[in-house]
Amino acid sequence: MRIATSSSTAPKASEAIQDIAREISEKISSPSLMLVYYTETQDAEAIKRELNVHFPNTYVIGCSSCQGSMTDKGYVGGHSISVWAVEDADGAYGSALCELKEGDDIAESARIVLSRAIDSSGRPGELPALITLHATPGYEETILQAIREELGVNIPIIGGSAADDGVSGKWSLMDNARVTSEGIAMAVFFPSARVSYSFHNGYAAIGSSAVATKVDGRTLVELDGKPAFDVYGKWYFNATGNAIDPDGLFAQSTLFPLGRQTGEIHGMPYYTLSHPATVSPEGGIQMFCNIQEGETVHFMSGTTEMLVSRAGRVVDSANDHDKNTCDPIGGLAIYCAGCMLHVSDSLHSVAANMRLSMHHAPFICPFTFGEQGQFLGGEIAHGNLMISAVLFHKDEL
Image (cartoon, rainbow, N blue to C red):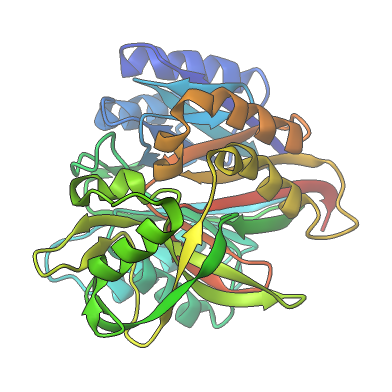
């Protein structure tokens, strides 16, 4: 199993993919699978077309990323494309994508995509060692539930929701055949190397909590029977001494999200985070993920320094998942776009921390509008302001 990465900021997709193909081909001759991350300014149709020319026998899935991406070579921002490729003659890989239309059954669509991806790998009836999931925002919990039901067990998942540069709907997904602004894409991995994983946030609950007493879709309407924004605003003031600006909620809440306890390890709770986005007309809070009525919601806190260092620590956690772990062959990571925007001046340091934790092995990391992963306790979840990581190891299965 060999992994290679490459990025380009060339103005035209044809030039960018030509440069990327040249660099990838210096390390691996016939990739089994390619993951492609690109900014909203890119011509996704042209990327798809050029990849098919240069890699006609390679499965491809692609996802738009907010303002850039990271690889083992560092942070690349602006008009850019980054590619992760794996060649594994002793493994098997497959991918599939579906375009969603109004009224489609999301769960059934997710099951179809998963089935097609597994069929394309040539391993029907087998459980993959890993699934990479990318979907356009809004359906993530339904998709994860469909995957769990279809497979019957929790399989490690690393995923991120398609993003653009300004939460304006200019996101997209792609595979070898199509590009869509509403859809679900998956790649399945049956690698010859062992997989380890980690899913973390690094924030801490700081005491305040309430029950979600009214929810409407992704809008948290009431906490303990009171308008959710009023409750959140009180928590924020108590923590910072400042009143929160309703028009600046997304940016100001990055270090103060809401969390729901997902499980605990050695008596220490861990949380799935939800990032407040905007204030609804009725005084609720519109979120980037679902919160269920009756769930306890905790007020969480983090620091800028934590957001810079945490990516490397999450990779370290994945590397320590099995005490017999060897140095990784390579890896995948997902880093929240909200966190990225908050630490935009320190992204080279974030990339450097990840590179050290990856032992300089090739990796790729897009910036997404929602993250999916598997906690060390086994739970699969969709959250915000999260970091997800997967490593592939030299010790073979």
